[in-house]
Length: 365
Image (cartoon, rainbow, N blue to C red; front, side, top):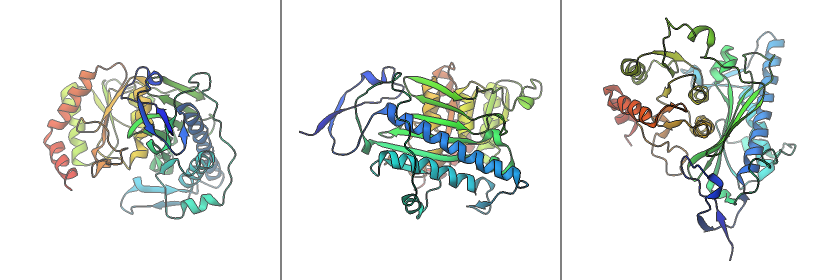
């Protein structure tokens, strides 16, 4: 009778590891969330190291950097040697640690990526970082788990030298929901002078920081601190000129006052909300689940809230995710803001004619 208790992980759980509610037959790899998150943190550290190594070489060699555009018309589609090196380090070490049964999805996956990894060796990852904090928990069948990896969120910013926007994202989704993750900041102050900062989180249990102290302002501090030019509340977006985003910016300001502040990188925007730097972060589209999984889990672990642009639950991690799910974007609001604020903000966004038009385009099959 090959059965085991599986951990049930409800949205915004308050007693995550006391809920052992589901019994299903399990035949494959069994995981515990503590060791799994610990290895993700360690793998994220390795990714940060690879990115810093590329940057150090770049600075030594006159700012030379090999860049490829996946879309010739879109500078946000940049791919660099830093992306590739970080992905190899992260996915390669996680694959070596947990084997082929653990599903790992990376932004820079390609047809020959797994073949490349097969010829590489990796040192073991640390499974014990959270042994005291989390301890032993119920087993989770690996078929329910997906690790989403963005080896360098903010590649465009990396290319342009805006290093403080760059992040390494390693998220854990269980049964289609973002549950845990780690955000690594290779350049927390925008230079190689400061060691990386890592923020990890587990929904229902909280968050922690490893490495350099996180010194973030209203960000970028020098610009957004100007309360006359950039009055609060701050609404964070990227610099997209898409009609729907222009409407969202103006709609948020018209309804709640304040001003729009520009952040690079999806993870960076969501982290800004998680840290309470901004009243909300809004984006109409992302590259994939790897952009959202780790930041959403950390935001929720801190007590914040996130939905898609249309006010609905983030569904991009599910096997049966709706078509064009990456074009549903997100709205993120910080800890301490009432759930009613998030609902009100989402309702105002959805009511905008430009958002309705965009939604109709997205939901066409």
